[in-house]
Length: 130
Image 1 (cartoon, rainbow, N blue to C red):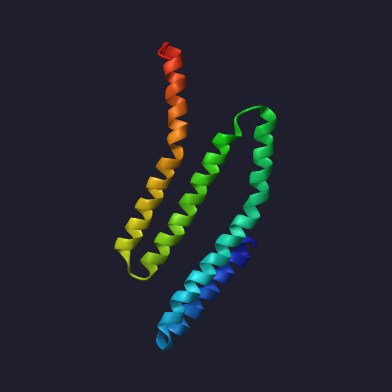
Image 2: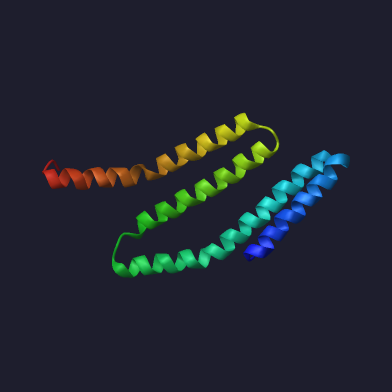
């Protein structure tokens, strides 16, 4: 999906939500979630080959590709968290949106703990502690 197609889908979904809001508001929520899932899936489908190329490029350099994988996972967590929080806000649930963001932040932190451990070990090896 290109940019124009994505924007057109968002505008179409918005118009459909406005039309449904007067008659069947519960369908409006389903439209928002479905359109968002379609767009998120399209983004993932378009980004996946680029990420595979980047991973192959990093592997050829001899660097540890684990760090790149951590960055990709963190990026994925951020996108999914933002998607969930935005949906919560769209339906007036700002407290739940904040909790979704907190969950995402904690997940990214926990994902990065091995990276932080490696950085500390490298720093300690420079000062001769390890």
